[in-house]
Amino acid sequence: MSQEQRLPLPPGRLGLPWLGESLSLLRSNHGFYTDRLAAHGPIFKTRLFGNDFVVFSGHEAFHTFATDPRIVRGDADPITARQMFLDSLALMDGAEHQTRKSVLVRAIGFRSAIEAYLPRMQGLMSELIDSWRTQGTATIRPDLQLFAARLAGALYTGDESDGAARELSGILADMRAAFLTIPADLPGTRYRRAMRGRNRLIEIVDAAIERHRGADYDDVLARLLTAAGDAGVPVQTLRADVRHLIFASQAGLFAPLTLATMEVGRHPEIAARARAEVLEVAPEGPIPMAVLDRLVYLEQISKEVRRYFALNSATFFGRLTAPMEVGGYRIPAGWGAIGGIHINMRNPDVFTDPDRFDPDRFEEKRQAALAPGSYVPHGDGEFTHHRCPAENLVTVAIKLYLALLLRETEWAIPEQDLALTNELFPLPTSGLTVEFRQLKRSSSAVTTG
Ligand code: HEM
Image (tube, rainbow, N blue to C red; front, side, top):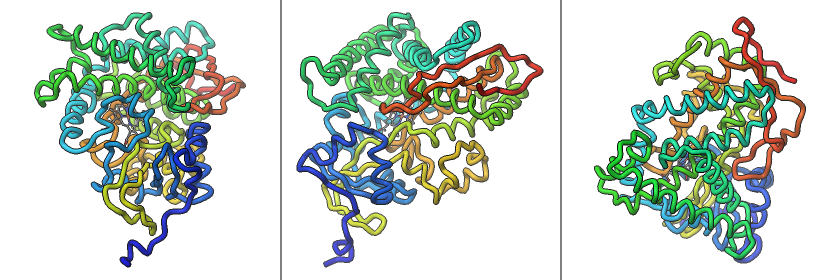
């Protein structure tokens, strides 16, 4: 018997045949991982939707999950991900994945591309912040949700109308809900609604591609079409990745923006320091990339928001093509593998006092000292692999939003239910009601109510 065969399987429960622990995961998308971390440690086994899986957390194990070529993505995800992300590159491997990924990275990862989208992003953010300032008190989650759908209209579909934004926002909410329900496509179920939403998204993206053909847009879709042409990716294939981008681009923005508003509003000392930076570096006018680069403390806040809050509980799922040894355990070939994102970033061995919101952990020297696999809100490894292509875009969007908010307003978070919901991306139960007032330039504090 080889050394590897003598090692034990990871701790954990497989549960019932086929079903395993799937219902616990549907009941609490994040609680599933935190409960098992507490019971079994950072590497544990489980059974979900007919497959045995091992969850990888702890920076070394997470890095292995993200980079080891024995772990592939094809045929690994449960039915919900395969249906909601139909034909997306996230569910593929090898040359096809790499070519398609290079197209996405050109359109949303390149600095020059992000720079091109900044003016529209700033315009829509400013409109929203102005409306909050005028209202005085606003419940901001629904507003940010609609804003992010409108931005998706501006950057992908070419239709920024209120009707289009509302429709897209509804469709994407239905699709997100699919991940927390039994995937049975039956009349009257949430899953049926999600499937209808997915089908409507297919129509919307196909219509947007038609609208863009031969027209003069400078948006993400135009860049995707050019990059796909250059890389030899058929438009027929690109459609699936455009749908993935639209899905991710809405929740991937409104969730961190809601949480950033809440957390900065609850920490007057962080708000004061951030505002001083903004008033020095970007007191008024457009905020281009070169100015955003200088908003160093805002960048730290944007990173801490993504570490501290549970955005993604896990990566897309993988599958072992050969046996592996991880953290002193053996995992047989054919088993599934999952990167446990959020539990990985509350690891006290890596992040001291992990339950404290502290942007200074991303001060340059401290961040440089983090081992690979430690800070992984967007996955790990190279962008050419499965790491999220929008990491820089998200950083830029959070910084731009906070800069505009801090230089225009002061805000307070009144008493309300801030417990986080059980959603794919958990947010405050109240929807986050905020009291805004015009910033008086001589004052520098955000107050908490
Ligand atoms: C806070 C915001 C976001 C977070 C935390 C996040 C996180 C992630 C994570 C964890 C993955 C999976 C990595 C893996 O399976 O190994 C991923 C993949 C992906 N994300 Fe994001 N994301 C965010 C926003 C966005 C946005 C705004 C977009 C698009 C505009 C986007 C597009 C994608 C795509 C296309 C993939 C699949 C990449 C591949 O498989 O090669 N994400 N993201």
